[in-house]
Length: 356
Image (tube, rainbow, N blue to C red; front, side, top):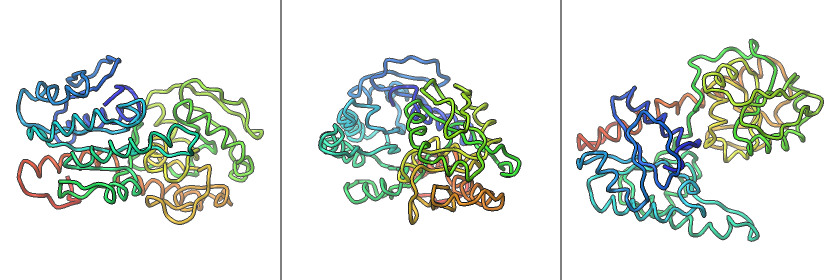
């Protein structure tokens, strides 16, 4: 993974911690082409992609092992096409001493011909195909990604491609507080670019905010150009908070805003955080049908479906979002890898979905 501190790598560290705490499986970290050197509680090796196999062997003491790759193309390559990573994983596969699992956080970009994503798309797809075909276990965070990988790749592994939305990186409520006990405020949470986009989208939803009787907007994250007010509703900056403090704030909050399209919901750590704490997600754009198990008006609210602020309707939405999240908690992610390792060690496939 690279760089060592971002949403993807922070999630990787949480997975490593859960594998150890929940399943007794110890992990080490290989960071490819990273210039950062944070202090971690796991053994870590920094190397170039072509040194991946040697780095894994140094960590395993030359013994056979298992490699879990967290893949977001732009994290490995400026053009989002991690061809060097594909080379490295093919080398690992040919060596035969390591089984490889890949979690696909992203596949490829797309855009109009005047945008760089349009010109990078084909090389990104080529690299992604190679990586998918080199791994033993493939997991993707949206149904659309799973469908593309199944359609566009010829994998040597007999294991089906797994679908698993991302988990919250700021904790999970075992039983969220009822909506009626929460503050009628909306959280804008995430990195600066995400929140700047959120305020642009919220400008068109002033009527929706009034309809839901929202009293305040809470801004959580690094410094950004947040407005002091939006549609007459004050914006209060809370700044950067520790994970446990974000969790505490979300546990007391009624709404959270998500500024991206519905196809991005299942792969967003921000959206996962809202659902994990029983916060009602408000989305920027209404959508029809079902996307990754989510429905507008049932699990999220939009300008079309936010027609009432009655506590019973809001309670049902919050409960539905939390139940949707409960199928892919951090422990559930750890269980997939733990079961996969047990299958490899035993030589027999475990029953899919068994309790850990």
